[in-house]
Image (cartoon, rainbow, N blue to C red; front, side, top):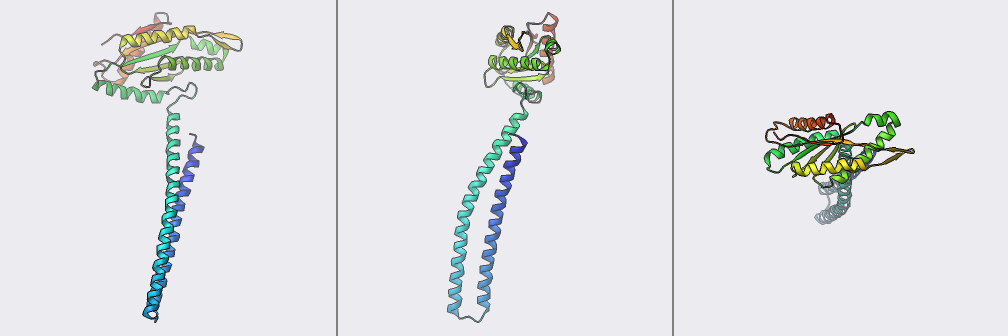
Length: 263
């Protein structure tokens, strides 16, 4: 899905198109040559039999050109179809990569913002409950300060894996919101179920023991949940409620889940 791969596929596509156009041009020229020859025969003082004979030969030659053109076109079109498939796959892979956070392989902030808006708009039309969970790794800066950024990266990757394991449904949208903050959008999930899953993630973080250069790394997380409400006037207001619940979890001593109030 790299730019180099996409350039390669586009280059192949252009070459194949070029072949199709060149082929057309050559065949066009051959047909024009045959017709010009026939015209010169007609304009000469040749006998009717000679003109008929030459005309039959020219028609037969043009028929052969058309037949060969069909075969060539068929194989070139097949080649072109393959190249287009290849290009679509590369572009689709590139688009997926653009939506992912390179460190954790979760969705990135841009993908989350788009999904939040889509979910908000659909949620307004549906009676199904939807929950948003905001998660923060507690005292993450201390890990970076004490052991360096590679240790922090290890914590982020391992916690991201626990998020993906806790929310495995295709419809669960797990993103790295930025820094040590993560966001999860749960379709068709009411507050009680979201609360239970959040407690499960909380416990998974508590149980995690990471070994970094002989040091044991342990950490906890804080979580805030907001269920989408008819009173939410836009996606940011829903996000603010989840953020506010997360803030209260931190204020209350971290390492806990706080459920946002239904409005």
